Length: 357
Image (cartoon, rainbow, N blue to C red):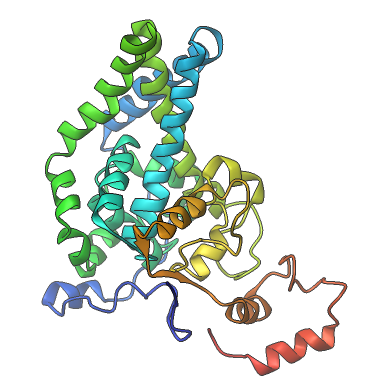
């Protein structure tokens, strides 16, 4: 069953109306500061060494081995791990748990938890915490991957510095009770290090050696390290590139953008301007059934077998009104330059629907 999100819902506040009223919350509800020009203090040298020298260098070497020496079975296995890891993040941590855009029965939740773990991007509870802060305080200092501090910061720099004081202040008012009450997510959070060792390191490296006699060097550097570098950077593109370049057909005042060329890489997470305009839509775009909208197709499949349900989506009329009122004119149907639509029709739409959706 598909249910429509209320038209009067604020896109950036839909998840947060139940914040507990405490002194900490009252402090957290003070207006957030805009992103400033504060100097970086690279306190986390271990992060720089870990990501820059170990993971990225080893991952690039793994990419070289993927091209020149890995067996075809290892290449297919690595691509499979990449796709499933991305699905664990996009369909699981993002659409299901961060935005509650649909509901899932426990077998699907278990699958998504395992796949999200394989992406090596913190536990779901920690991922949801950061992502809800990103939406509620997007592009300000309370946003953990604040794109106003530059594309490098939004891509990977935020992992190399301490959290901004604004984040630490505003996080006190964040409601995470739903994910913290989930037994599957509590289990993952509690045993995350052990699960990572098994799912991200041991199984991906042992499987190629045991089943098709891959070398240990290829097995460690390709399906483990190269895979994780690809997965992280793909998800990071959404925070960096999709807040820098692209079109804003739904809201021209947002930094978030749409770039259709990234559809295949991100499995459908590249319509970011749409997503920030309508964060509760399980499709994260207007598109459905496209060749590379794999995350949406994944959710639709489990909806057909009954494991996913209460899929939330947006009506065409609500989308059209938002495009007419706040878009940058690049929408492929309702853009200002649409030759099949006169200026009079556009002006009439804005006159009839002047309020927020």
